[in-house]
Length: 325
Length: 296
Image 1: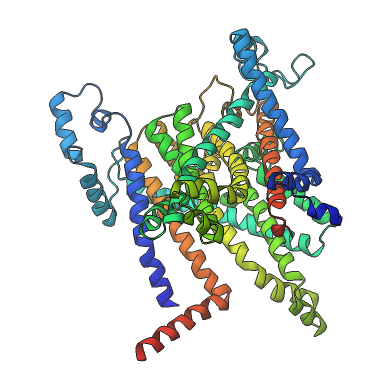
Image 2: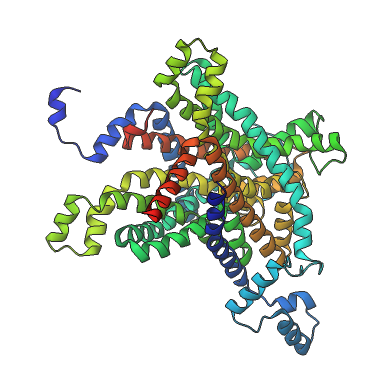
């Protein structure tokens, strides 16, 4: 297991180098002179040239990238154009807020998605199944920023039950302010999880070992939870892992609607004010996060499915055999 | 199926259509989509014929006296924050979402097909270089990638198109590569090669037509995703700019007036949802019709 994780971590290095380079390259295409943006229109040609050298803009792209990466490993993402503060610090300050939102969104998705999906599969083609399928189809097709607007229209403006802007303080304040953004972010994913859970449960539900389990006299609850769900969980985990990327993209929209002080909003604000180092830092940070979540998902597989683990063990044994022979 | 039917040779398209037709949900999705295409085309024709007169006088013309008026007989969807008729704006917005989504996906399909078939067909180093690059692109969430591209290049119709197209290329490259790999070792390919067909001819004439099925499904669902991304970018102010009517940017400006009228928030979203819904059910139906084995 440890070796598997190490190998996956090593495989991530070239991908992360590629990701950072692509993002760096894209952002370097931005028109306009960063020196002029920092110093303003009144700056003299000399101070502009001075600033350009200071920023390393006189060097070729690859050198600048190498410097950037060198600094990145020391936790330095440069200074924001807007307020001359450390990009890394601002990204790091906002990250917990986005993480809270993303985790809450995933929780919403799982808490709605898995039970509804199981029920749907067990009662296939009943009214309950059909209505949950229609609802999940609508959920998948609904732009989540629109859902966010509708939710705040109804629950914040019409009924006045929940706040629609900002992040509350204190545990209950936070929880109250989290409800609408989390629902907004989680509903679309929930719809995908429902569809995924239903179809992978349906694949399991008619297997012989399920009949065997029932014949042995195990309660229906145990059959569902232990025998069906455990086997159906792998595709669901994959779907949720992939959806995490959408969540990060969706966070930009959701955070904008609810004025949630997270990375997404920081990024949108930085784009509007043409704060390139900030955008670069935020995008790289989110892309790296996404890669790590994918890694976690892969590791989670091995825990969920002993077959994957034993496959790996089998290969290790085989390699050892080859070496000794 | 009657025995006489079995003998009848059907083309893949005819066979698919026969199966697709039976799926009422998918069929209604297709009808809705055709209606939307028709609407989009007619607005373009109307603009050409009237020299934008209707567009200027009804779609972007402001009437501040009547701003935020709710739905009425004269204006069935009501008026927006500048007193513009929302119904007219909805109708004129169809083409942006629909055609931009389609063009973006068409672009990424072309690039994806080229890269995927080259990677799959030639294998080895070529495959490795192309697919590792695709892996890297895939490791950046698509909305994030699109946002970064638009942030760097600036907001214009073309840049949004390029951004969305690039973020979808890896999906298509992977799909095509996978089906090229299953096809390229079959005997009819070897036969074609024995007859002296060039690589290009083999790829375009023999391999690609046989890998169309997953590609068509992917493209249909891709258009839905692209429309959502375009609307999302416009909502953030990074896509299509006002006063051009586009559903996402209509929602974006509605946000500031959400307290003053529900209709400006609800209606543009419905437009997006109906379009995506139609594409999704049609895509699902196509997948089932093209490959009945996948249906459970």
